[in-house]
Length: 292
Image 1: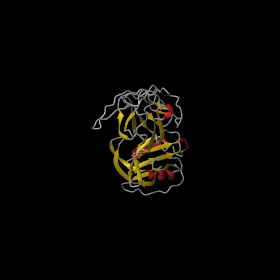
Image 2: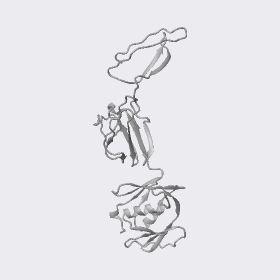
Image 3: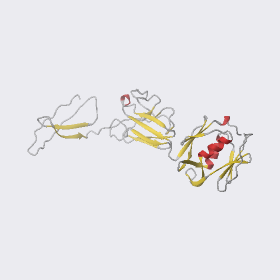
Image 4: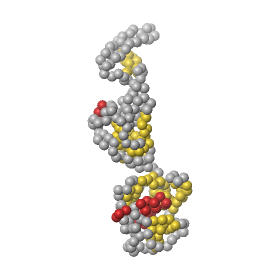
């Protein structure tokens, strides 16, 4: 480093010596310095960090993070003299040079992986947070640090206690979920709301799910089983589903939960083809459904 000179000292009989000097560098106004003491044979006998002036670590800690949909991440500048930023850009790739060399806040604090989001310049003690609404792997970097060497990878997994429901161009929404054994259960009322959103006209009447549909292929009539939810299409019971009772976190009240796969099978019976992969319940858009 320019301006650095070697310090020499002679230790006393107890091996003690006092060092005093100044490290100057026009190119690096602050940084971390490691002071190493060598003996006459140039062997290291002691070392310590120079703690003044305080320095800022040019990076995010941790460098990678795994969270779930609905979780929030907060970045905080902890360096006394540190200056960083938090930016996600669609072109944010290794060795890219950001167009936001002096970033300004953009986007909201709710992030779905679409578009760009950025904090303002973060100075000592300031912070920035994002809530993640969509699963995926996202790369954040500080454009202030040349060529993106301050990087964090955020791996967002589907929510551990929610599933996504998607229908065509409808925005993804989340349903509370309970995993019982290998099956996933969702609140019956929430599932009915979503069925209506995809064009399957439905309502709950006691333990009956009443579905109105135009003429559909012949379906087998089933006998209602006591204690189970009965699905009826145009007055014909086409199936029963086991229920569980649990607290719905969206309402804070006890609610009936029904297995998602039972919904999938029953909807297939009337020509509404949905699919469930364990975390996403997908359906065609309402305009393509055979129901009214």
